[in-house]
Image (cartoon, rainbow, N blue to C red):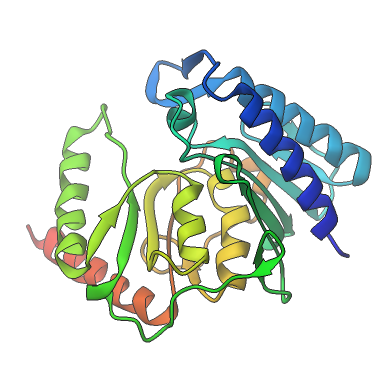
Length: 274
């Protein structure tokens, strides 16, 4: 099935809604967690995407970060992040995006994301390549050295376990020393930069299912390897049951992915011995 037109139209509508709200929103934190922010734009865009899916694919499941779950007992599940990088969006930073991905059983098969502030829409379907505004895009050459690459690393403070944050920063230091520079929008903007070959990789240890599905299909179709943080396949089985589960990812062209995994593996072994 061809999902290209649906993704393009829905993400274009979401982008316009986000631009209409940009700089004019109020925000609140979820459950008192200052790192998790929601605005009225998140709610409105999520509802719009859900309605479009119900209208176009009425038998498909839906998992939306803000509005919840629609269970049609289908092998197909749409996974929505209305605004990824809401903290940025709420502060009028342009480094945010809208994400929409599709799982068939446990495999991402189609997806897209938009960068509204940059008027860019990215789409991909399994086996058909990755596109930005309908132009083919690719990750960096796989023989690129990590030392000459920009690497994006999303990190959040763990207020309930500050030592976890301190340990993660030790690993981050090892990656910083091995690459040209670290970038951090903690949003799908960083994934877009990898898809276009601007950045060499993007890593995150603490995210959710809706942060992964759309960008995984884009990055893989652009030539990247996309795994969990420690190099293992991501488990999307029973996606409607994974709303509260913590996910992670490591995405990069094959050679850079191997280099990043070597750093992570070496650090993990030394950290365990400490």
